Each structure stands twice: as structure tokens, then as C-alpha cells.
Length: 295
Image: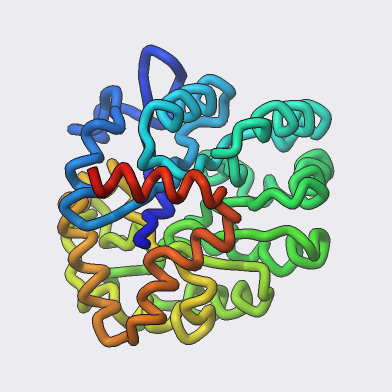
């Protein structure tokens, strides 16, 4: 079974997305799941995980509505206000009544403080997740974000974390620019509860997001595979952001090429098994998604 562990939808009439603007061109509008379905079918993807696009309840409510209407959606990663631990706990209790809800994410990369996760109030919010055994998606786009992981692991030894987009390695830059990512990702991988998404691997050259090849990605994927192994890596298509980097099919085919040298068992882990286990996706929802993909 193939699971895409990272997709987005958003509805400008239902929620506020402060980060979205004219610079996002073709995706600066409402994005519906119906647009994604043909791409999933073409790639042979059976199930998908929707991931929050805004730090508000309205975005979560919209994703859960989409999940209810579209059988291919097997899981949803929501937002809760970690900086308000009591509210976070109450909201988490509410949304977890829905079996689609598997994890939490906050858009920390849009915040001015790169150490926001270490604040005492946010730290208690992470403890709420840890006590509930709910996963946390870490949007790590700066070296400072990766630097937080050892501390987070010490403070929250039972918190399961997944690093979105391999923490945006310096793809397309020179070999001399691989640091500090090269070393920091190694430190992050030392925690066995930390996983990573093979997603969002586009050019890091400003203004040239779509200017990448599988060969550009390969050294960073190989580094992640060496450190995490297939049991802690999961594929994510990152649609519709991937539209800005080519399209879904181009990203899919590029990652399939990069992973073509792996054995079938390892590919099965990266393209489905790891996500199912990490997020503990409901078996019934996976069966529902697989049946929908076969229709």
C-alpha cells in the first residue's frame, strides 16, 4: 500500500492563511482535494495524510470535513495552540474523537523566534502531546530548528517527532554548502523516536524552486537513508506546494528514481509502511482509502 504522508488543502472562505499571497502564483487560491485525486491515481497512491496549513481551528475543521468526504484521506495532522497548554489539551481531546486525527503541527517556520519550541509555555504544550502519545510534525527550515531536536528529545523522551521535508537540505547549492545540515541531521537521527519525511526536496536556490533533478536530491536522500534507515523515512508529495517545483508527477517520479536502487521491502517502508506505523493510522481508514483508490 502506498501512502503519501504530506498533502495540503485550504479554503480561503473557511480559514485564514496569513502566509499565502500573490508570490505563490497558481496556488494562491482555494485548493480542493478533487484537484489532487487524479495525481494520486496516476502515481498509484492509495492513501494520503492531510497536514495543517494554518495555526487555527478553522483550518483543522476544514481538513476534517475534507477527510469525511474523501475516502482516500486516511489521516489528518492538525494544529493546536501549544503556547496555551490548557487550550491545546482541550482542543486535542475534542478533535481526537475523530479517528482521522493522528498528530499535531504548528507553523514554527513562520514565527520570528526560531527557539519558540523551547519557551516554557510551548514546552508544556509539547508535554500535552507527549502524555497523549500524539505525534509532532516539526517544520524545520532553519539550522536553528534542527539544533532544537536534542533538547526536545531530552525534555520529552517519549514524544514521537517527524521532521518535515528532511529539514530543507541545501539542494542545488555547492558541496561546500552542505553544512550545517549534514551534521545537524545526524544529531537529530540519534533519537530513535525522530523520523523524517522525504518530501519538499526542491532547489534551495532563491527564485529557482523548480530547478532540480533527481541527481541533485540523491546525496541528501542517501545521507538521510544512512542515518534514519527506511524504517524512519516516509514519502510525502507536498502537494500543492509541489506545483511550484514542477508538479506532483515530476516530484513523484524524481523520488522513485532516487529510491530505485533500494530493495522492494525498503521501498515499501518509505512509500507506506513507515507512515502507517509512525502515525498509527486507523486500519479501517486505510482499508477505506485502498478501496477508494481501486474504484
